[in-house]
Image (cartoon, rainbow over all chains, first blue to last red; front, side, top):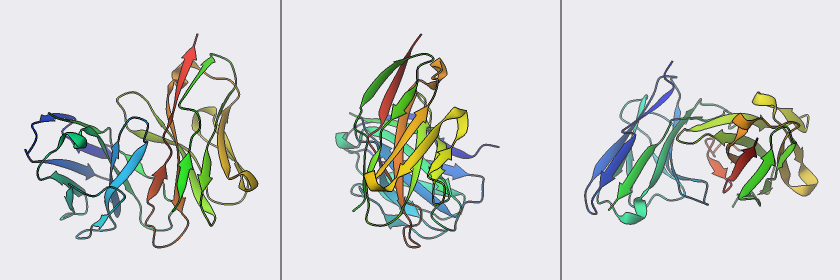
Length: 114
Length: 116
């Protein structure tokens, strides 16, 4: 009963490096989301997906790309990391349907860009 | 655009005391409202949600929240706080529309410290 699993849990990058964060869910959820959490700003939506093969921009999409090739996985990519992308990244998923379905969150990925 | 404000960045209470965390939202139509809790180093856990009907909703861990449309508020309450309630609490709103796909707008969060 894993729920939402994020990999890796911690990572330190140098400016300009690239990396991919992986989110996997085992609840057969249609919707998946990537958020970033910064002190005093709550969580802000980066990108989301409403089904396999689909992605859409959220509130703060610049500098990130995403892919949803398989229903259970949602990947977040940083092509050229910048210090402003130092943050805690959370993935979430929810069932398809009315918008009252609660989101289930992973434990986060702590990313530092030097 | 919808927004959520949590006026209190940090609240400190004594164990056994009552608690109220404030949340105000800005949205033109009827929102879906949520409260989440985040323990250090963990993800967010849903405490309770409001969609429609009874404006007083009960959640897990003894929490409740009251939706007041006239005040655009959705405050979280607990009659007696336990030390294990120390965490950060987030209020969130979702667009009650078919094209929003459940996207959440979060408040800034309120950190709760509990003194023994």
